[in-house]
Length: 155
Length: 281
Image 1: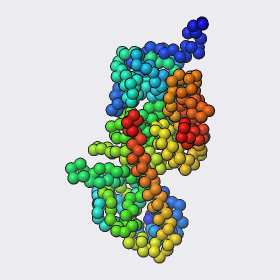
Image 2: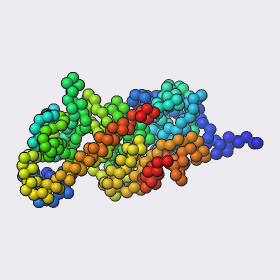
Image 3: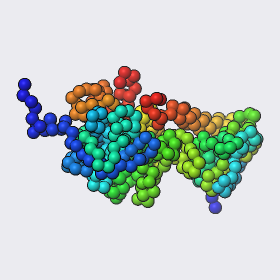
Image 4: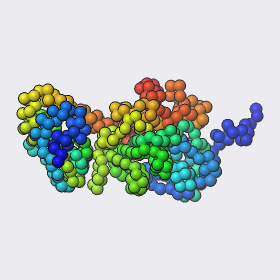
């Protein structure tokens, strides 16, 4: 049977971590299967978890009263869902809804923060990886602001 | 002064052939494909080359070939309505005449990718010149490694060749599509092509990449591929410049020491990247 640490070793977010560090983080994780259409995050609610998506697709967006979920981005295999657990006040900025059945490793944020405080080196390694994710998403958001595929005459 | 003879191949290369539209189809709002037959088929283009298309009494513009005769017996171009000439071309109907001269320029060098994984990244109308690559690799599937096609567009409605994508997937291509803004019923990606590329397995040393789209998108994509271990010389991009003569005479499309119509439009990233960093170019 594959352990949580095994699953993490196959996930691109954790793949280059030391095996010992993955074992420590695995202690805060559990394997989850989520049905399509499930709300995984709700804007404003307490952020006490993050997910390492192993398969499936999640839509992240803002819910409009009449238009439903307005997609900001989709996340898939190998992606990380949720970083608000890392920063006070630990509240989700956006909604996230599964678009298909999703398999993920869900991490307990309280457990993780405690381990990171005990071992700042591990904490730094984890924060570095989250910074990389934030960097990628910030760059992507800025590229989309440019409306690159819009009308070249009026852009 | 002697009038140049049309028997001179240098002159003949500049003369448009009048061709008839066999079919036309709306690909997306403001984007039309149309197929031509006739004499132009006797000079079959390579994927990535372009023709100069002449909308009679309006003007002439360069348009990449989006379907070669190998793909269905006809010559196909896909045009986005962004100006007077492209608008006239988009308004063509079956039986209308259009002037064609070409093909011109250097294409994608599909032959040079034999035995390699092929990553194709097309943004917006940039997918059009890549379509012949996709069709050729799928037609000669055993000669290439994996084929991954990453497509970006503004909205789902703006995606090109959507009706063909199921067949591409069925024939073995991994096709990932993403849009800047999703809409109801859209069940593929929302984001940018570099994010989709990050989810694709890329075997850097054994990959050839072909990219076409807005320059900022090509730059970001090429950088992402470099980070994945694909050498700059194996990343090809298609540049768009003010091509007028098509044969390297007028100099309007000069970029540094290169004339895009003659030396491009496809250039490898090690050649293109330094040029794209120069503001004046």
